[in-house]
Image (cartoon, rainbow, N blue to C red):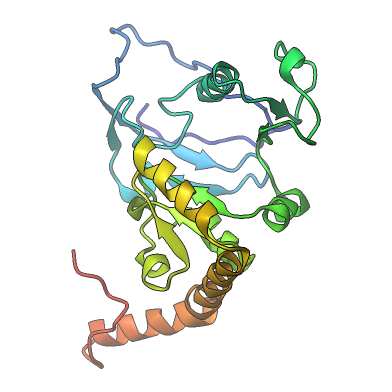
Length: 248
């Protein structure tokens, strides 16, 4: 596909599961985990209909290894939610899927009250998303790769303590003691969760407070506009190198 596709607005309810539709079926061999995929893509929010990312904006396709977890779930992790549900069942963890109480797992589905251990909420927007942040104890993002994850910033705005990986690209959270650091491995995530639960309520509240202060002081439009102004002044030879400029 050489031309940028036009993504039509989604009509109806937001799908609860990954939906795959082949518009053009290829004739070559099926790509396998470990191989490199080279793709053009357009990402559009189902609820908002707004584009959030597109390879065409960068003028070149995007490459990634299949099955390595380097992209968002759905690109090379079809059926990932089903795997998580199966794993929960194997571990003896009761779970709820609040989007549908009529699935084949109904014998293991209860309401949101104990003894349910895991809840599959599905996509959350607006008031529903705000309620999730309000009633949560913490926000956890063991990501392999992020740009700047808005979900972490939203958690900080809601004064929630955060557990995240360095790949979330928000080192300010660690240096400000607004987040616990963990690597995207089972052992490291386990250690991070244990460390979090060893903290007192007061310590977790203080971490969330520091997160709010960080987000409110650094990740707000007036501050971002100020940094952009400093950057362009420096580029035009009218000022010193801005502190927000990172070295790569």
